[in-house]
Amino acid sequence: MTIPQLSIFIENRSGTLIKVLDALKEAKIQIIASTIADTAEYGIYRLICSEPMRACEELKKANVAVALSDVFAVEIDDQPGRAAEAVKLFSEAGISITYMYSFLLRSKGVLIFRTDDREKAMAVIKDNNLKSIDEAALAKWA
View 1 (cartoon, one colour):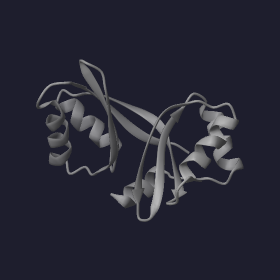
View 2 (cartoon, rainbow, N blue to C red):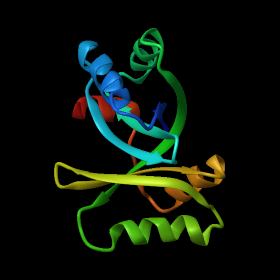
View 3 (cartoon, rainbow, N blue to C red):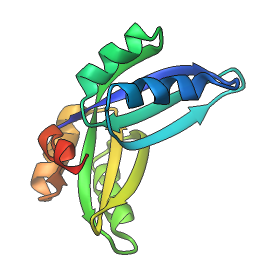
C-alpha cells in the first residue's frame, strides 16, 4: 500500500516557499508532513497532505512545478530503535531506500519513504506485519 506525495520544485530564493504554502492555505489543504532537500539553485519540497490530487491541481493553477509520486508510509512504535529495526528489514531484503522522512503523530512514529523496488517493499511490509498507512488513514489525521 502506498500513498501519494507531492514533489514541488522551488527556486532557492525568498518568497518561493510562501507561494506554495499560501496556495495550500487558500485551498484549505492540510499539510501532514513535509521535508525540503536543496541544491544551490533549487529545492524539492516533498509533502504529504490531506487532499493530494486537489493540492496538485491548485499548485499547477498557481504556476508551481509539482509532481505526484507514490511513497510508503509505515507506522512504528514511538520507542528508540524502532525506525532502525524497520529500515533493517528492507536493507536485509536488498531494498534501497531512496529517501525517507519521519514524524510523530498521536504517540506513533510514521516513516515515509521511497524504495527502488515497490513489489519487494510491499512483500517486506506484509511478511513482517508492518502497519502500512493508507491515504484514508492519513486524511483522518488532517
